Image 1 (cartoon, one colour):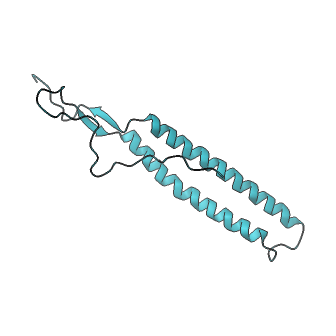
Image 2: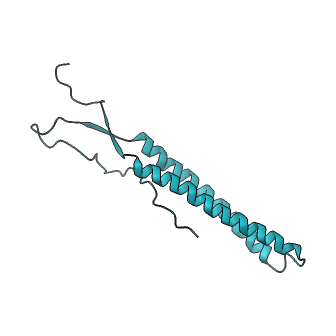
Image 3: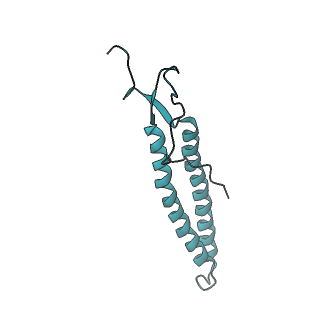
Length: 124
């Protein structure tokens, strides 16, 4: 069993850019925007996770039914139980790989990026 990696965090309502000017003598003002690439990773995580959960739920239900003595009374039943167990293992590895890929990409992607929109420019 794998533990899910940390999910990318969506922008909070009161979250502000990492750098802001506090006065007229500070460094030149910079305009920041929430990184659209990071937002896509948040959306990807939120899209993929429920689908993976649904697959796991279906396989768990099939596994429980296959293991039930009322379902199988023949030796072939154990083969199906073994197959479903393998599918569950593969799904677990796949889930871990997909969520880790998204999490790793989010860790390497800045949440905020500089933009030229609404940035002050001298002598325009």
